[in-house]
Length: 156
Image 1: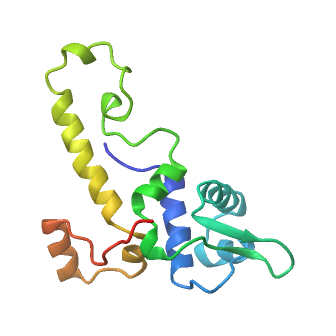
Image 2: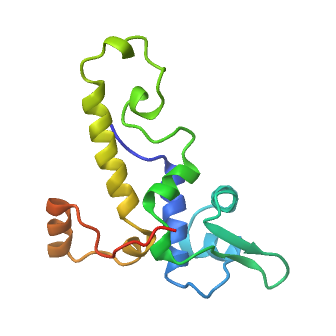
């Protein structure tokens, strides 16, 4: 089953909430109360996102966390890369070369790499700004059929 980790899901939730209030500094306590996640999880998420320069922090009594750049410049792929332990890949060999014993003779590796590239491209094209507002059901169905992001991301 292809799925992101809980930590990545929570990280996307944290960033999506922050993107809705781009001029606000959020404390861990505030995010805990709003999102109903525990403080250690939010702290872990924010630390990883900070290491990947997706959030910035301000120290002090009035400090907190904010997006490091506009939500249109943060892709879902960047969020996944920041929070997942392994490089993105649908199969071992599409993530990291040399990890499979039959890689040299594999007849399907090129196709898995092609599929991996398409999925990665979609994750690169969907930005945090797309995640802020829930899609109306009709738009959601159209987006699934055509896999087109609602907002054009402007990668940095």
